[in-house]
Image 1 (cartoon, rainbow, N blue to C red):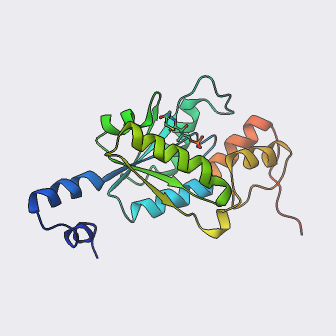
Image 2: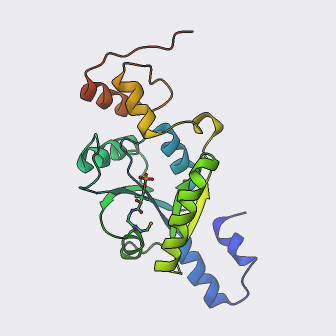
Image 3: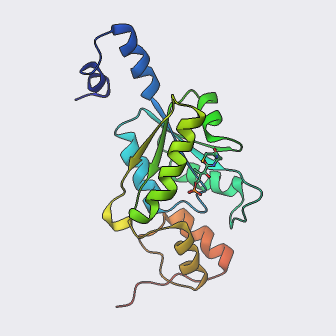
Length: 189
Ligand code: PNS
């Protein structure tokens, strides 16, 4: 089933159908991405199966202490998806719904790893709906391989010199090693 006819089955007013198809073309995928992990990459790839374009939206929050600057976080994601013209990367500040509207998107993608994510995600999704009822949040589950993965743990493992194999893209591993001045390790059994 193509992206278009998923919606054809639900709507009988042609004008409405065109509007609906237009709305779901681009999705924003917001986050701190400090740094992007293979779990995030997995969600973006899954998102591309549904949407024509994913706008990875990197939160610029001077109040939140991050390891990588906004510029570095954006640059890393751009490098990872350099070959994929359907992935755009931009930073944003202020309300996410405003950013989505400015970029003509009515859809927010968020990854859900485990039940522990649910409460925070539920609150955000409903707050965003309150702020703009036209914007929908779509939750996607990453591969089971990444369901334990978080940027916070990746930073901790890297800082303590642990193995990052399979956790982050190579570009990110290099940048983490530079930040923490650690040397690459392989998994020991
Ligand atoms: O990767 P994170 O840190 O879980 O991402 C959180 C993010 C960026 C999605 C969230 O903090 C956000 O949307 N911030 C923008 C501010 C906003 O719109 N707040 C009101 C709705 S919750």
